[in-house]
Amino acid sequence: MLRTFRAAVYRDLLLAVRKPADVLSALVFFVIVVSLFPLGVGPEPELLKTIAPGIIWVAALLASMLSLPRLFASDHADGTLEQMLLSAAPLGAIVVAKTVAHWLVSGLPLVLMSPVLGLQYDLDPLSLLALAGTLLVGTPVLSFIGSIGAALTLGVRSAGVLLSLLVLPLYVPVLILGTGAVDMAGAGLGAQAHFLLMGALLVVSAAFAPWAAASALRISSE
Amino acid sequence: MHNAGCHDFTDWIMLEAADLACVRGERALFSGLAFAAAQGTLLRVAGANGSGKTSLLRIVCGLTLPDHGEVRWQGADVRALREEYWKELVYIGHLNAIKDDLTGVENLEIGAALGGRPITRDAALTALERFGIAHCALLPARVLSQGQRRRVALARLALDATCALWVLDEPFTALDAAAVELMQSLIARQLARGGTVVLTTHQEVAIAAALEQRIDLGAAGPAC
Image (tube, rainbow over all chains, first blue to last red):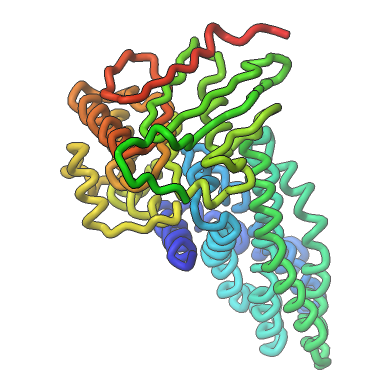
């Protein structure tokens, strides 16, 4: 099972490296959206500081959603998904591996880029740290929850729209906790409670989402 | 499980189906379909386009639920066996399950690991060599021709030599005469070993088989 897991992660990373445009599009989208806001609302440091966590988090939600349809769709199109469904290894393990690879490719770059983007909003170092920290804990949750939506909308026409309708409401708790933690850190208060709750969300979604996504895959590929 | 100690495999019913029915949309593709295949049986599924051959194969694999009836492997429902059954199964559908951005050998190696049957790179290369495509083993699959891609997909059969059940959907399409001949010998060897092969084909390809059954799904299913 571990070998299957490793092979699945390796495969998806290899495919991402061979086709970097797919990977970069989410990151470029994130950078551009976040950079457009200061241009739009004007250079008032206090205002920018207030809206920064919300904007960066919403942009991260949208960017991670942008890459979700690709999670299973290309495997579905070329028949490799069928083979995964018929694997002697548990399908759940393959789904976890694909989700982890998806996060490494489309979530982790956002985390690494966020402190740089936060500078545009004049965030203090502690807030920048909190921002990167919340994204580090929060973006995997987005990938796990998103994997259920991606599996359910497989092969459906206009899957992208349906996917966002399904998944965005489920992202709300992560968004609230993430922005809340950055606000707390900026105000000099402890953000520990927010981090703990996000950690709990991560554990719960990592435990249950792959199982749900695996069942959804079996249903949608019938 | 059952291990036939002698050469007479015929006692062991490996794959059987009881009262299968499949409905697609408003059309009943087939109903009341039943068969029992002993070890070493070649099961040919024939029928016109749209008569439900691929649907039947997907039901046999456990990918699709039949609308009625069940498929049993060594006496147990395949939907209950799941991974236990899939461990014994090689399915090659009409999609090749080849990633365009991976090379032939990567496709084979990673595909095997994902299937839960890891192989070494040497084994993958040997299998590709048997199918006469060793020279393009290191090329990305996108530059291969249709026939070459089919050969990469079928090279799994040269690997998965220990699997008891092969389910092949139109294995001979896009293949040239030499490759068809190789497939014939691989299938014959699998049957001689006591494996079971289920295949659909429009070409009448002769395969040496001690036991052969034919399921005729007839013309395109009647409207209902």
